[in-house]
Image (tube, helix red, strand yellow):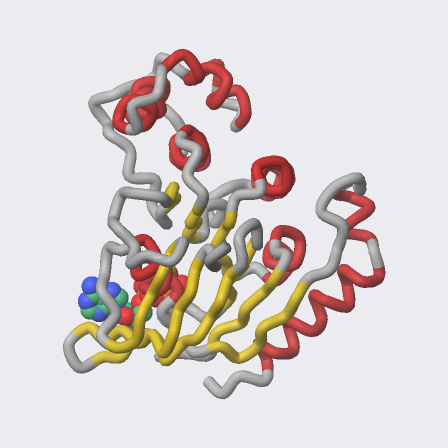
Length: 247
Ligand SMILES: Nc1ncnc2c1ncn2[C@@H]1O[C@H](COP(=O)(O)OP(=O)(O)OP(=O)(O)O)[C@@H](O)[C@H]1O
Ligand SMILES: [Mg+2]
């Protein structure tokens, strides 16, 4: 079976600014890869390359063995929610299902999974920023794509909602076996979510640390998991890799 994602010598430049690379990464199916790195190091660029929205300046990218096709094979959650303001909350999720040729009767269930069933009929500008981001997550989960790419999806959320959604996402990924690439600035979030954490250098982002996270994916409560000594040790390893980077 081919890798879910394969980057070989990938580099990307905007004009004469090299944003990222060279990066080599092989992501097996079902992995939850978290990318951590300073602002501007090229994390969003890497996600856009994997989604097929940008072409690498150098190197090659394969998803499931093929060059990525934009809009196919990957669910995306962007740094900004990017919802359709003329549609309701439910309407935004229904559109994703319709676009994928799926029945729209799962809208309620999907909104329920992100705690938004009570605002299904509101317009997206009538809900908070955190709620908008949750609509974007429900929309990405709607279609059963093998790949889920998430760009700092929880950055604008309050601490409690953020933890709840982290727990939900961890559970969803363990249950569905989807391959996830998740971008964050938070070391704690990286270790909690990831089965593997990659720390990137400052721009142009390259792999500074590639760390497997061998914490249990199921059967342990989130609070017990966060309290494990292994959790603290992993957090310290990631943090010190960060601190050792030249600025
Ligand atoms: N469309 C663009 N045109 C020119 N330069 C760009 C473009 N998009 C990004 N860049 C530059 O490329 C670099 C990497 O940007 P990118 O958005 O990938 O960083 P990031 O790691 O996601 O940052 P942040 O954590 O702030 O979201 C930055 O220096 C940015 O200014
Ligand atoms: Mg970004």
